[in-house]
Image 1 (tube, rainbow, N blue to C red):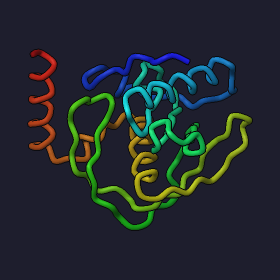
Image 2 (spheres, helix red, strand yellow; image 1 turned 135 degrees about the vertical axis):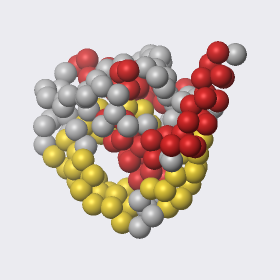
Image 3 (cartoon, rainbow, N blue to C red; image 1 turned 180 degrees about the horizontal axis):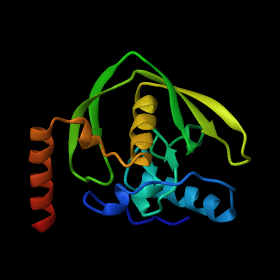
Length: 167
């Protein structure tokens, strides 16, 4: 396992179209292991392949930050099929380090997810895991969490972020 470099806001690969994962390969096993390692090293809750510069519809979620292996979920070509309720809470992103904002997300989600063997499954998540699923699926659609904010707030954060990177 290796910690991969996380690309940051402004890198065009975060906005590129991501292709579906087709055949599962040993290289994808390695990528998933590296992504879990990277997520844990950054104390994150998840990471999408585009955040490490690979434009495929693959993400990992671990709301335990590596503490509980049973919490690890691999999302392959995931689609949200149902949402319920709402939660309002703080959210951050490994691609926008140092910044968090309060966002509204569903309290509970159901997603259609492909397993490495090609079969499909339905996963259910609530609270923090639901937030993480939504956040990572947004990445797979080329969307960052700040895009859920109004334009004024998003521009303020973008200016602060760019200044922080220059300094």
